[in-house]
Amino acid sequence: MTSHDDAAATTPGDEELLESIGTAFSRLRRRTSGVPIDPPMARTDVRRDLLLAIVEESDGMLSVNAVAAAMGMERTAVSRLAASCVTDGLVERVASQTDGRSITLRLTSRGREVLANSRQQQRRAFEYITKDWDDDERLVFARLLHKYVDAASRETSE
Image (cartoon, rainbow, N blue to C red; front, side, top):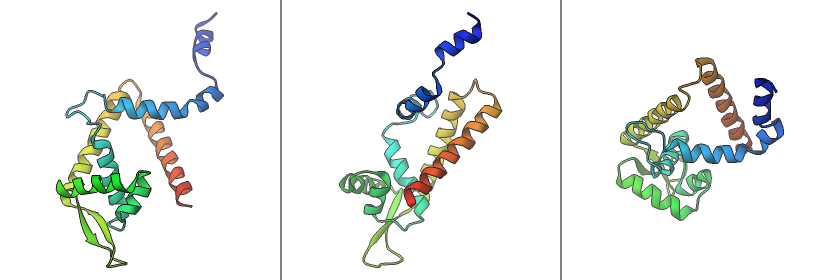
């Protein structure tokens, strides 16, 4: 058996690779927070950062109910999370631009700063995890990941 045959024996087939995508996403979420970067990534910040990113993308146009739907979480849990973000000075509650009776969330300058720091941490984690990859592999992965996210965004907005 050659080294090529050894690699083929241990490399999953195409169908097995596709079947294990869900497992790979779960492992990625769990393991990325354990990457040794400074400052360390806190698992408790993941939901907060997701809320901040959704609020940023909406440009202050989403209510807590809409944010809960976007996060796939119960409204009460998102309401508590949003209240915590308000207390921490990361978001503010403002009257809706389209319906003055409705309240929407908007990032504060501190919220933008926290989100930017989080994205820098994610970049450092990516660089740490892919330290043995060449630059072309990193760029191909990044392009495909963005393509995947764009496709998922189109599918969920239809």
